[in-house]
Image (tube, rainbow, N blue to C red; front, side, top):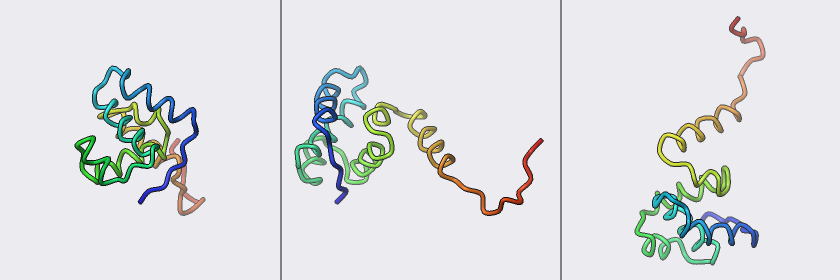
Amino acid sequence: MIKIEFTPEEIDALEYERYHHPDPKVQKKMEALYLKSQGIAHQEICRLVRISKPTLAAYLKQYQDGGIEQLKKTGIQAHLANWMNTLLRWKPISRNIRRAQ
């Protein structure tokens, strides 16, 4: 099980966004995370939100990586954000690598 600590402000934001965000896909993500913040078991969240366990795990990872703002990204935005996060954490193996001029 993935453990996440939620602040009261984050819970309030998740509750608001699950009904008010203009994108239904984002609303679904917010609903899943809101239920997680309420201590609902993963299996029950999947049943209630009608998502698979891998999808829930992806939502939780998105939230861990960038909070609510990361959850608001969909499609290509989400893929680009994940790719950029990977690049930002990447460190070259050798400092002797020539830089492009």
